[in-house]
Image (cartoon, rainbow, N blue to C red; front, side, top):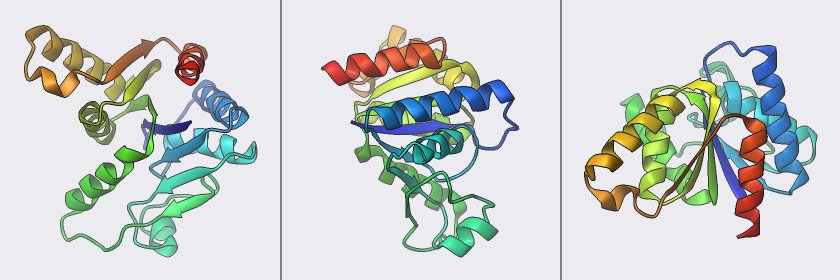
Length: 189
């Protein structure tokens, strides 16, 4: 199973949040999942780092063009991944590179797990709708997960362009334990 973890990368994490991310990373390693993150910091980094330490393969999709830029310009780490994919070039408009990176991440996963997040996570989740992904929104992490959930429900009730959300599966869960149960259900399909 291939799983992409999206989420907040720029907030200070509490000990509880770190522990929950580590629990998810250890679980994903235990089921031999291939994991993809943005290769950065925050929630996805903590999931990836725990998974790597437990023997999993974790792909990172860096916004940088090489390792030096990844570390020095973006202040990102390398210990949360086993394999890093760098951008093919530096884009004049930073948003162009960000959008390219997010688009490149979409085909990889069977399941998307979203932990908190901000604008980047919101955009990644919107793309996941178009790619008809199974999306697990973990409620204990604040941020884009809450906003995306509201927007999805709002648009769905009004049936604005149903082709966007038809085919995607949105699963809202309270916490990491509930997310793990949903991943188990996905594995049995």
